[in-house]
Image (cartoon, rainbow, N blue to C red; front, top):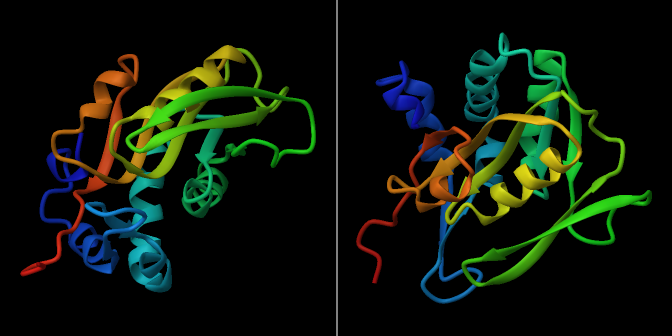
Length: 191
């Protein structure tokens, strides 16, 4: 579900967020229009608007865990977690966490990857939010859901700053709701 379809239609923060995202053509491979959120992070008003929208949505949902997907989910997750009184749990690429971990492999649109989480980072029955910058196929979010559920957490929702209007990934999320702020930007007159 897009924020603009859920009570935020016409909210100027959504336009500011969209405009703050830079598009890099053909990165990391030909045909990909990379949505670069580093320029969003440079715009303090748009960045604050992003965090504020998520905080407003999750403040009263009894979420105790905000799980951020490496690496760009780390940009938003800690701020949201602090504001709603939850802990932040990083979901990392292999061999980045120093303690005992559980792993979950997944497929990307251009390869495979794996996420890891510390054993004991979440407890059975905790309510979790998964946050990332972008959803395309849903493979990464699906792996994050599986990791959290293997530890007994209840995944309440997944949230992304950017998502395709026809998010095929939603059907890979095992029925978990998906909340998206903006659609990917395009470059006008790009050849």
